Length: 100
Image 1 (cartoon, rainbow, N blue to C red):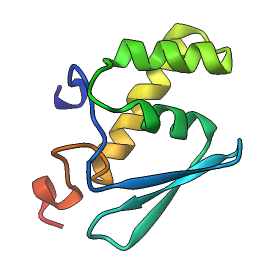
Image 2: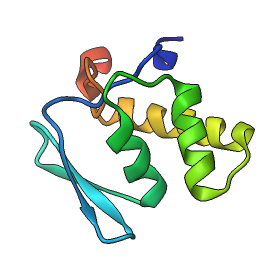
Image 3: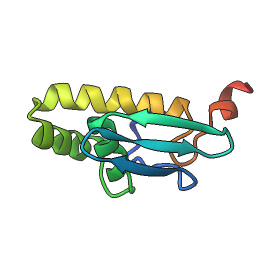
């Protein structure tokens, strides 16, 4: 499964900003679109530098938000799937595979 890349990275053309403790905003390149992320989402997004695998990301979520590892891993995988669809991961784009 392509989504479960060993060390996912955010698209280098995206930019994000934390907004207090409530989450943050991500600007998606070439789409004039902004995504609002909750605190868990912004934590995961900020860690996507290519140095962590999904288990390391899940461990960080589990530690910071007091969530069991299995649930954290499931949530990270779902979040990465959404990010891939929106072109927020390196090498991904919403229109690359679908043509739309």
